Amino acid sequence: DAMVIQNPRYQVTQFGKPVTLSCSQTLNHNVMYWYQQKSSQAPKLLFHYYDKDFNNEADTPDNFQSRRPNTSFCFLDIRSPGLGDAAMYLCATSKDRGPSTFYEQYFGPGTRLTVT
Amino acid sequence: GENVEQHPSTLSVQEGDSAVIKCTYSDSASNYFPWYKQELGKGPQLIIDIRSNVGEKKDQRIAVTLNKTAKHFSLHITETQPEDSAVYFCAASSFYGGSQGNLIFGKGTKLSVKP
View 1 (tube, chains in turn red, brown):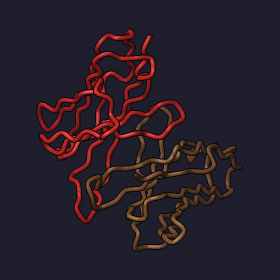
View 2: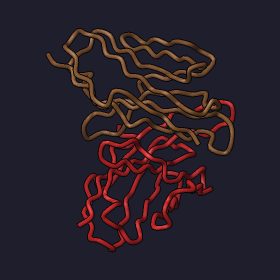
View 3: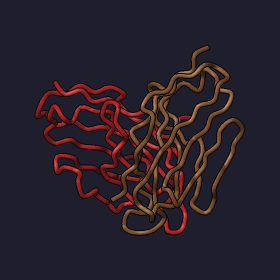
């Protein structure tokens, strides 16, 4: 009964070689998020999709892109991974977004990315 | 923007003792404060949350307190058990504004409960 699924759980890529991480959800939620979590640090929001509307955080590097082909799937593309991009990447979903209330975010187990 | 500080970074307690984790936030517009538990190999899971119109909330062995004036909130776990061992994150968010619904996380507290 997994609700937010991330594949693969572990990904190794070479410096500069494009990589795609995948997230799917069975909750039929409108909103999907991608977070980056470096070792011993807080998760940091990269961007989110509200339905088909893409919302980039101001400090998210251009190297990171995202696609949401349908409600259930969302992809994180890293065009040219650097050593500093090694991290856990967490996908989350929420039923909706504001105003006047907060909708719980449900997280997947994450994909740990290693850059060699 | 919002900044959330969390202390301590590590906490070790004996089974049955209480554990307290504290967070401070900087943006007075924040009005929603969730706590997440992250077990090894898993994503964060919401364990309790509090909104700014409430000073305290309890759920069995877990409680959260909020002091809006001082801009700090705390997680209290009583009668700790080994399965409480995990990393705990506090977060802050606002219902309003351009970043409504965005979670700003603290750096996490690694709690170890020794049997």
